[in-house]
Length: 466
Ligand SMILES: *Cc1c(COP(=O)(O)O)cnc(C)c1O
Image 1 (cartoon, rainbow, N blue to C red):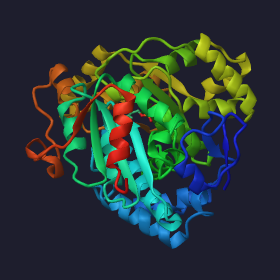
Image 2: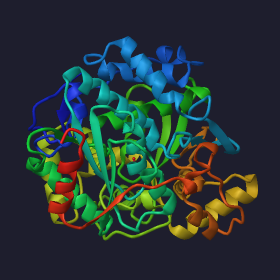
Image 3: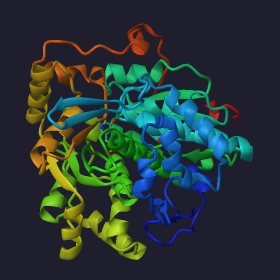
Image 4: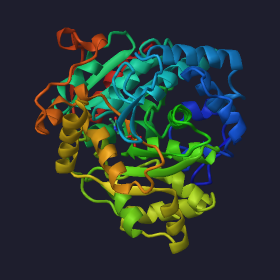
């Protein structure tokens, strides 16, 4: 399998190089040159497989040139063994033919564990073989940082530096990052906001000379193809549990960077019968505004009850645009460059096509709170604010009640106790057993000024073989 850039002007790469690269050299994102396609008969034969066996069948075509089958199987067994439920991603019923797919049974209680637990193992495997080392540098406003740290804690060829805005992430989120022990784990609290952190990360990728040529940076945000790949699997898993592929299933996906829902689009392209794919956003609703009015326009950031979806632009949307434009990288490049300058629209026939692929809804904080409270009153089941947005959007957009509607449960409610409290639900969500002593664990992090030279010097001095 070869991978090509969405802007059409970077060299095609194999899986290993795509794994280790961030953006393509032309500024685009890597996508597979062609997708594997599974017949209904093949998909049907996967009924009853364990999550890890299913993951092998869905993902192996993407990695087969780089990793022997037995090694990949072993890696997947290890990856999904750390989840705290036998089904790895269990379904919970909310109402008639309405479900939540719980994707928060991993170590950090958010769906990002599905991809980052695998990514850490993939990186270490490939780096061991190449006898190389990388430094992961990332900025986080919450969930990505802890999932990336957990995913890399046992890596011997990776040092990880995660920047978070000092005193601006929730205590649960901070402790999930800062209490993980390991000499390759480095938490930096920056005296600034999330954008300041992200700006320093971007600039450091652009000029890596501060590392003295002795190692290189690797990316763990969802521009990394391997993350998208790992998320395709659970669409197959949920469908098979609900009678697929002989029955089509709909999904509602709480969306920020468009990574998770793009994986659902790929599952459909690979042959899985999916009826509706609902884009569920909060008030940062650039995608919903585009879907409803063919106007792609950045607005200022709003802080909501669902902070992991507080984004201004959705970087993975570029991967969808590439398909919408018949894989014409030059056209994608032009469109996105124009979008930097002001609002853009696409040709009417392309817009009509994308509206057939996706439904969308934007959900504000009040509706988020109402949904948390209603579902609790009805079922004594607690939703986190991101999942609540998915459930609300699913109910708004649903067309056919005979088709199962599955909302992706992207986080455990105990990660967002304040949002649960604000909704008026009187019970406090409890952290699962493996994190019950989180507030007693010792933290380790370094506070640094919002100054790129200071941060880069810290990294240059602290990675393992510096
Ligand atoms: C990251 C995240 C999202 C958004 O996922 P994208 O792939 O960026 O669309 C939604 N909910 C939670 C809890 C998250 O951590």
